Each structure stands twice: as C-alpha cells, then as structure tokens.
Length: 147
View 1 (tube, rainbow, N blue to C red):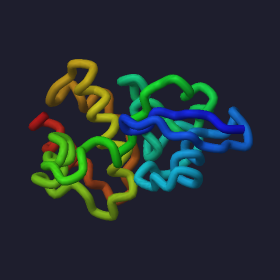
View 2 (cartoon, rainbow, N blue to C red):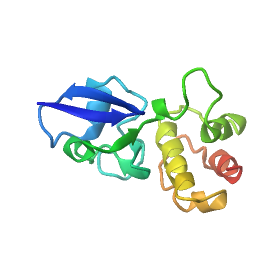
View 3 (cartoon, helix red, strand yellow):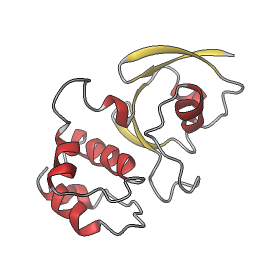
View 4 (tube, rainbow, N blue to C red):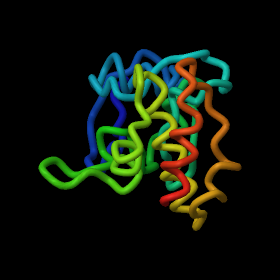
C-alpha cells in the first residue's frame, strides 16, 4: 500500500507491505535513510532514535502506520545540506565523541529531542539512556554539558 510520510520536512510517497512494519525498516530499507541504526530491536540501546512531532521515539518499535500525518526527523534531516552542523552535532565533533559512531545518530537525536523539550546541559544527561559499546560516555557528558 502507498502512504505519505513527512520525513525531514518533505512529504514522501512510499510503498509499504504493512502499516505494522516498524518505521526503522521503512526509513532504512525503503527510503535509503541509513543514519538511523538497528541495535537491539527492543527499545533498550537507542540506536534507532528519531524525532516524531518533537518527541523522541524508537523507530524499531514505532509502526509506520502510526507515523502517517506526523513530522519525522532523522539524523539526515538535522542539518540543512551545505550549512554548518547542528549544535548537537557540533558539540559531538568539538568533544571528539564518535569512536565507531554506530550509536551516535541515536544519541544525537535524543539530545535534540531533549533540547526541543527545553532541557539544557546536564538536564539532557538524565534523558540520555543509550548504550555505547565503545565507552565514549565521558566525552558524551562533556559534549552535552555545552548544550
């Protein structure tokens, strides 16, 4: 079936086999937006975090049917092409947070959702419950303190 999703500020027509399909697979496999990662599939690791209507959501368990009519932002849509990096992305770069980088898009999106909710600095840390196997938590804390 064909549905329309608003992803990164643009309406996109996509053909999905079922409205129960996780949004993650639509973003990655159908739309080619591979910045959102698959980690655990059970809302624990946070690698699949996107922003839907200014709320942090885990795309691995968020059904695509529930996303219709909502504004979805992925890591690809955080900064406009050809512009300076988004403030959260810049904080990540300035504090040399990424190591392997796999979990970083989800963490960045969770930080941005917290910022949109009015949180700053260390307030954001209480919202960030993501897993990073590389152990860059100290650099993540330093980056978040600058927001």
